[in-house]
Amino acid sequence: MPIFDFDFCVQAPLEAVQNFHHDTTALKKLTPPPTIVQIHSVEPLAEGSISKFTLWLGPLPIHWTAKHRDVGPHGFTDVQISGPAAKWEHTHTFTSLSETETKITEHIEFEHQRGMRGLLTRALFAKPNLLVMFNYRKFITRRHCRTA
Image 1 (cartoon, rainbow, N blue to C red):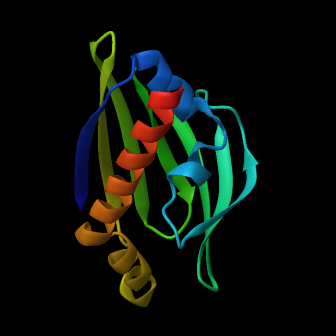
Image 2 (spheres, helix red, strand yellow):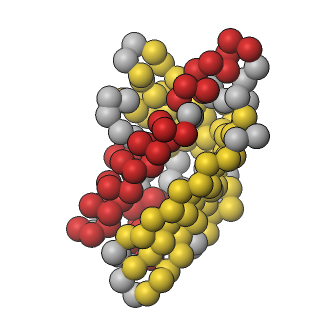
């Protein structure tokens, strides 16, 4: 099972990082262009909350439904309950390093679909693509939390 880990620090207090991730528009902000996010429904981040959205890669729609678990002051996990992968669990962990600095740790465990169906996720979730996506997320998170 592939695993992807990524961490970075934000010059912002833990509360600012929490507030950013609890914002129902965070997914749109954190998705790098040229991918477009179409939100169908999103519940405020809480234990068992559901988000339904489509990621548009050009003309290709990728439908996704995620359920949140382990929601607390130091992070949460979003679990794909329907979508392109056979499995997708993304844990966001927030660690206060000081009153003005927070470490964000991203941990993803995923599995590809078998056969031809897995080609999409093998391309999308290849390590170089995940690095581009999470470096973009680092940039956006830092930018947003500094001005929060």
